[in-house]
Length: 119
Image: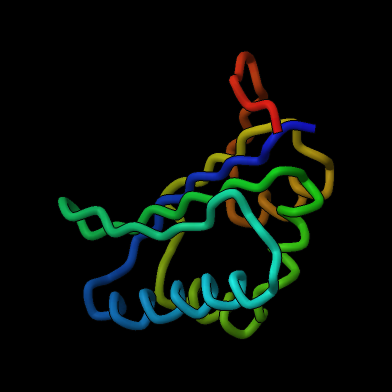
């Protein structure tokens, strides 16, 4: 299987920005503390419009699934109470389980055509 890459754009009302950023840090701290090594798991704020962009890169579908199961459901619930998904793209050779997880957030799936990834 190929690397799994995800790009998610989140709408966050200005009054929820500080809490959203705190949750983002809690999720990335939990990922770091788990000892797992995702290729990348990063949040960014778009300076133009205040949306947030999440980049996730995992070496395998199994690593993506492990990450999805790592996040505390209460934290994830709160994240989606204070924000909404504007768009979500999941790219790679995707297992049915990855598709099922990502489908709950309205993901668009992209299959590889050409890549330099050799991992």
